[in-house]
Length: 219
Image (cartoon, rainbow, N blue to C red; front, side, top):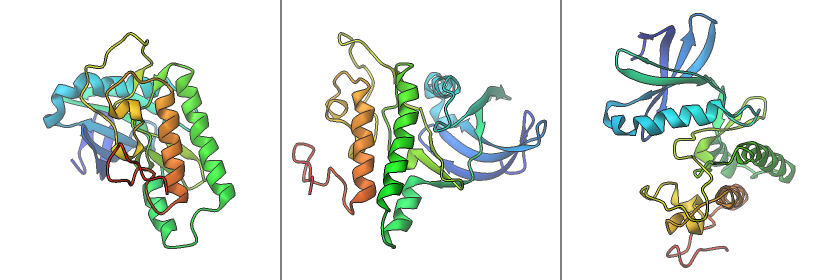
């Protein structure tokens, strides 16, 4: 893919990959700016509806702490969406680097928490539950701004009488008890994950480091 052009986007380099596809840095040839392109992989074609939903949910949220999605398109059988390119690092990378130093300064930890909480508040006001808040899905820009990414398993808040037909989705160490058990989820699911992320940021161990999900390690 490197060096190829899709629509008016020239692929420059691979940034990473996930369950539904590859993410590349590209150059918007019309607006002359760097962008990120998420391309649905052939192996994940059955997730096309979810892929489109991810783009639509993110595009409908206009907030400084949420990744901006610009466009979605399909060219020569390749479905992709285009978002802002963030020059920075994920919170996971940042946390790994901090472990080798003096850790997170308290005021910095508070600021990061407030930023992510602000982004989640904007999503929750539209009844959107992210369902996968974790360090890998939070980018830190060079200007110190945090951006929530990857709404791939997000969904609209459901009523108490609705049932879950999806397979268990999320990241175990950051999943709320109701999410792990496959019960009805609401906005509190993200609040739990936010707390778990905060704990991980300030502690050398996971908040769920016990021998099982029924015996979480809070020490």
